[in-house]
Image 1: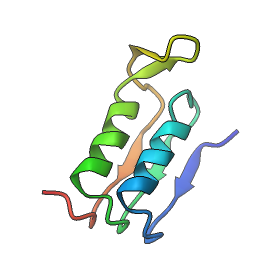
Image 2: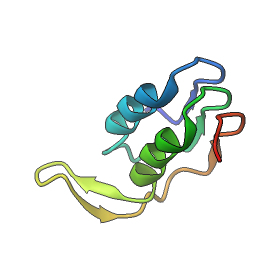
Image 3: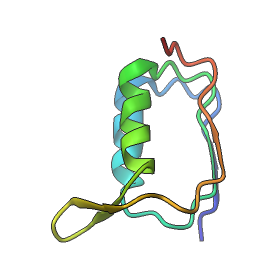
Length: 81
């Protein structure tokens, strides 16, 4: 079971944040996500926030509830305004 992911300084950018957010849509075990120093910017941050604030029904792709497992999120040093 995946509970922690550290992508610190992986230079994923906006598109990487979008792809990561897609992969996290139905994850209910992750409790630590470190994205420090990835130049994800405002758009990338929004992609991550949209997924983390809500769980998705995989059949309808509709938001059904907020994430209740993530305890640590590091998005520092990401060109966020």
